[in-house]
Length: 291
Length: 325
Picture (spheres, rainbow over the protein chains, first blue to last red):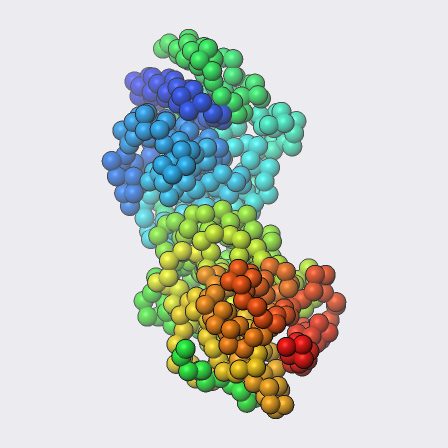
């Protein structure tokens, strides 16, 4: 169990409020573009993404290519709309801009899967599953070569871990003792064919990650207290000294925050009509945690 | 058209290994202060020049073991951290095993990784699992990739050096090693994407790529003894493709024969056929390469002879095609 006794509850409340706002904006974005988003996975990772972008990543939204920034690779690229929504909230785009430039052919900037050519804040174009961990391993090695103190985060889905290439990358990251790499598994236990555990189980994931040379932190990833505790516990990103890379197993709920989506596999990908959009916003508000 | 460059028409079998020579070039480049990273899978002998380079510059060299998909993705990540990356892969397991990573991580991310796929074609021996016969067909369909098949080891070294300032991702496809030098004079003009005419001739055109350039030259030598003058073109760059060189050679000689250590499907021959057809160039045309089947078992030279890819076979095909001219 993660130690949460020294957590800054003011920070937690602030981030929880932000996560509520991002969830609402995300649903509005999906409603306004009128096409399917991957809301299930996007909502499951929202708390972690909010904590990273609003507190724990060294990051300047006014200068997304700042050399010393921490890098985030979204390996589960189909959940990019969470990131777009955060970028808009951070002032990099307006919501209207997001909507007006989503898959609009000649003028498109945003797509279901993120493209670094069009969006400065995107570190790597992703979409094909099982690629992010290799990219992140390379980035972390690059930081080591430069003796740069920035850290590489990689968000990977649990179903995605069924791709064998991940384990090649984890083996390499463990071998090279990349203490500047943090792998975050958004473990919502749902994939398109049902639960991950019943499809092809990846458990026991903590044992597997330790066997591959990682230190493991396991949390409830939709509880901001535990998210903050995990990210607070990260050691400084020393690029040079060989240390065990870190894996945060973030146990989450697919569709977290929207009651009618929670743990419903159909919300892996789906669109929102007006009624469902309004219901989603109401549900997010009703699920706001009172502290 | 520039004058033909000097080539080793004596063919006294000056054997050089691209794998060795490019390793020496990496060493020279690093010694000169050039910044780049090097990644390899488990196929670099410590006694080789690449091995020596890795021993001298361990902080920039990473061995990923036997894990080609991760190697390509990791190389892309290293490149995303702001540096050119040379990534040597045992060729038989690069294009097909890591195709998704080449497509998504290297090409789609448009990063300066130079994938060096060794043991091209059937040069590794060992049967069809170890043949690299579909890679050019794959690479030609992936946007952003520059695809180069050096004709000899020294040309490979030149490409490696030139690639430091070349934008975007690149595949350098090399043979197993110990292939004959094609170019006697190393000061010839070399430009990525620009074919080199290495022998003039008006009767037919032989276009080769990679180690097949040498076979084309040898065939041209044999044909010359019979009074048949073959133009020989080194099509070292498969992408971007020098269509102009093909068009002018076809118009000039009326007969084009391609030679490659690759399946006849989708490689150099296909690229040339597309250019000829789309530009309405009528001429005699024949592709020489591996047929659309898993190759017969044998040593590389035996396989080449069996399928008519070796110089004698190329010359024989040329005679047959010319007889119908």
